[in-house]
Length: 393
Picture 1 (tube, rainbow, N blue to C red):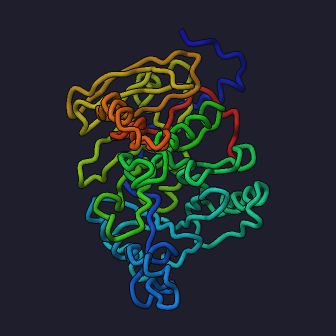
Picture 2 (spheres, rainbow, N blue to C red):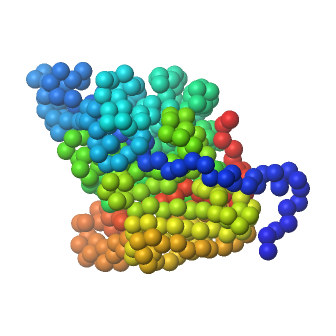
């Protein structure tokens, strides 16, 4: 039985989910072009590789990257609806002739070099970050919010996002950066399970943060496996516009797939039951103990989980079809729930191999020995309590 709510103020905190009027749109919130300093554009680039006066530059030829047009056309070919070009500390791409090529909506943004990397979603200009201290970044975030944008902690474990939530209450966390099967130390330096734990820790502390994913695509030679939409962030929005997509992200209406639509990426949806209808979406706040439904498409045989506070196992089951649905009732003491789907990646066998060949483990630094390697889809959280750590307005 649901716990009685003590006051009308608390009752008002659990707003019923609105009738569904929008739809899901697919995109990538983290893509670089040759305007980034670490993506070379060939002869004539403003930061040329292979400079005869700089021997180190010869090593940078492998960073040959993609133009704005190439990234947008790749996004279109993969079935994406929107694309955020997030070059390092610059917004030149937004005036490039290739902006929005192929009919894909361009989301203005840039990746901000702070104490960690911050995604300035919605930014049409470069903001003053001062000395990058907590106070300066908070002021910058307030200015970004004033202009309708959002601040995201990118791949927060590499480099470490070194701001407390109370200092800089980020709107979103990139819990999925690059393909999940990229493991440290090569070809990725990031700990993917660690990124997800970073997001979970904020949820456990009472923050309401949106989960997103981004390919972090930089280079032409990696676009096949790490190009636009690998992973894909799906956003439930009222319409396909910059404001519509940002509003959907702000509300937490997101879910992530490891592949884009035209590659048949599995999708996971988490819903809550309000007045007999499955109208609550990730990001919504509902009453404690509200029934949940997880819906997974394109992943028969995958393990499907609904996870609550501090790793609480609300549901663990196997998707038995290509279009799988399962209901569950969470404990009324829980404050949130999110869903994930993953494949059997033989962790026990991998650990045995790493133990038998010590050089593989590199003193515990080889994530492949212990991390989940076959993540397929993750949703943002549905909440059963108001946020204890509020965001900036």
